Length: 128
Image (tube, rainbow, N blue to C red):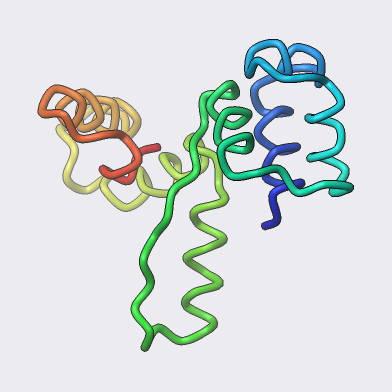
């Protein structure tokens, strides 16, 4: 995913107009417009500020050199999913381990709370 698509997706998910995002990030609407259209690639610090204004962040995920290309694509697709979609997919795999009557999302919320309490960022715990 390129910077333009990443930024456009983040802004839309956050529900901001270009003007609102620019104000939150301390830049101009023109910078947001140029970055989203692909006319100009924003510097990494500008892209970071814009994404943070949408409550998102850039992250680098190391991939083993021996990972086959199709596995890399699957991983990238997974990382592009929203948190809600990742939680739903993960919840499907933990149902057998939940107490009777507890919903998968309740267990994941408990896990996220525990991770937060011990200082593990949600992204590092696979929940953000």
